[in-house]
Amino acid sequence: MRVLLDTNVLLRTLAGDPSIEGMRDILLAEETEVFVSAVSWWDIAARIEVGLLRADLKELREAAAESGFIELPLRGEHVGALAPLPASGLKNTSFALMIAAQAESEPMRLISADARLAGRPFLFLRA
Image 1: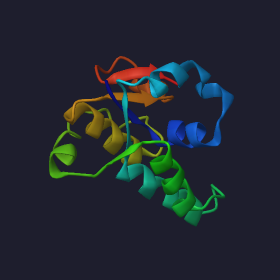
Image 2 (image 1 turned 60 degrees about the vertical axis):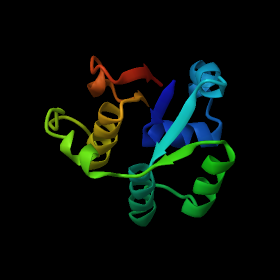
Image 3 (image 1 turned 90 degrees about the vertical axis):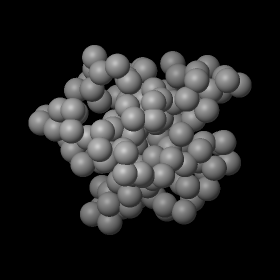
């Protein structure tokens, strides 16, 4: 199974937050490939820049790589998948929508805590 972590789930996973315990078996399963979008790194860099997050981007990327997470680059077909997604009501719209579009176009399952994505066929699990 191929799964894509949204930015918030990525941050919680790397921090060892107890809220991700329900996903632990899925993330650690041998058959699971865990992906992190390049868009998440952009999102995190923006949060650091405006003071919403205190973290070292390089250290986070290294921790993700050490965890075996695979970086998913942003490609043109991902951008093309944006059109059918609901832009209204999503916080951090650009980043959240782009990551959702990546999951839908790959295809892979998105692990997200964003309730506004509920019911989408690519949503695998709400963290």
